[in-house]
Length: 333
Length: 290
Image (cartoon, rainbow over all chains, first blue to last red; front, side, top):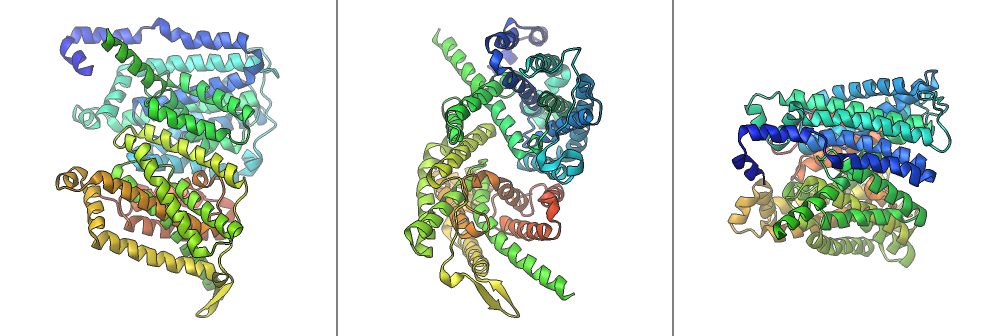
C-alpha cells in the first residue's frame, strides 16, 4: 500500500494527504459521544468510568512513545506514579486545587521523564526495556523506603481535594467523570497536534528507519527525548487524575504491574493509531471488572486466555483486526 | 574482624546458592531469546511447573527426591514442545509486542491454574533426609541442602558449557545464534533446533524451579513475581550465551543476598541500581555480542 502512495502521488498531493490527516474526521467524534452517552446510560459505574478515562490518558501517553517513536518501555509507571504522588502530596499538604495540581504533577513527571530519558534513551531493544523497568522499580523501592513522605506500603491518605471549577467531588463520581473526560479531551488534542506535526512525522520516521533519519540530519536522540518528556508529562497528568479522584495514592501506582498492564491494554487496542488506548483500555478494564465479579478467584485465567486468543486470531489488536477486515473487503470487490 | 569474615562468608554462601537457582532458571531464556529473538516473559512458568510437580509429589505421594525432580523436568519439557509448536512458532520474527501479549497471557493463565490445582499458598519443600540439616565444611557448618545446591549447580554449569562447546548440537546452537540464515543454508534444521532448545531451556527452568523451591518458594504468582530477576540475569549476562547468564546470576545472587543482609530496608533498590550501572556500561550485557 505504501508503494502505491509513493509512486502515484506527486509532491503536492502528498502534502494534501498529510493536511487531510490533520483535519478532523467525523469518526473521531465517536469516542467522545460514547463517553458522554456512557455517563447517562451507566450512572452506577461512574467511578469506574472515571478510572477508565484517566487510564486511557495513560495509554495515550504510552502510545506517543511506543506507537510513534518505537520506544518499548516497561517502566512508564515511573511517570504515572510520580504524577500521582505529586498531586497527592500537594493535596495532603494544603493545596487541594485540582487543576493546578495537574500542572504541577505534569511538570514533575516531565522532569522524571527528561532525566531518566536522557540516560536510558541512549540504548535500544532489550537493554532499553530493562533500563526503563529498572528506573521505575527504583522509584518504587524509594517510595516504599520514604514512608514518612509517601506513607510507604500503607499508601498516602488524607488528601483534601478542593472542588473543581466550583463542583465538589461527589461519592457517585459524577464530577470525577467529567473532570477526567475534560482532562483527557485536552490532552488528546495536544497529542493529536503532536503526531500530525512535522515533529510527529519525524518520530514515525525514526521508528521506521532510524539510520535514514540520522542520515538526513534529524537529531534522533533529541527528538526521542522530547517526545519521551511530553509523554511522561501526560502520564503524570493521568496519575494525578487517579489520585485526585480516588483521594488515595498506593505504592501500586509505581509498580511493574502497572507498567505491564498499560502496555497490554494498549497492544490490545492497537499501537500507533492514537485511538488504540480508547479501545484497549475500556475493553481490558471492563473485562477485568466483569470477570472479577463473576469469578473472583480465577479471573486471571480468562484475561490470560483472551490475550492468547487475541494474539492468535487478531495480531495487532483491535485496530489490526479492523485493518485486515477492511482490506479483505476491498479485495473482495 | 571475625564477625565481618563470618558475615561475608555466609553472604557469599547463600548468594552462591541463590545464584545457582537464578542461573538454572534463566539460562534457557537467554539461549532462546538469543536464538529466536523471542521475548518470552512466560519462561518462569516452566520453573513454577517443575517446582509444583516436584514438591507435590514429594509431599503428597511420598515420591523420593530425585525421581520427583526428574518428573517435573520431564513434564515441563513434554509440555513445552506442543506449546512451542502451537503458539510460539507463529510469532518467530513477528512483532515483539504480540510476543509480549502472548507470553503475558500465558503467565496470567498459569497464575490462575497454579491457584486452581495447588491452592493460593506457597508449597512446602522437604529436602530428603540426607540433604537436610547442617554439614561441616572446613571450619564451620553450612546448611546441607544449599551446599548441595551449589555443588549441583556447578556440575550443571560445567555440563552445559561442555555440551555447548564440544557437541554437535551445541555447535549448531552457536551457529544459529551467530547467523541464523547462514546456519540454515549450510543445512542445519533450525526449526527442529528451536524446538529442542526451547524444550531444553524449559527443562532446565523446571530443574531450577524444583531444586530452588527452598529459596524461591513455589506459589501461583511465581512466574510474575520473579520475572524481573530472570530478565536482569538475561540482560546483564548478554543474550544467546550460557557464560553470560552464569556471571550475571553470580553477581545478582551474591549482591542481592548482601544488600538484603546489610541494608534490608532498601529492598531491591541497590540491585536495580547495579543493573542500571552495568547496562549503561555494557549495553549488550557482560558477555553479549558487541
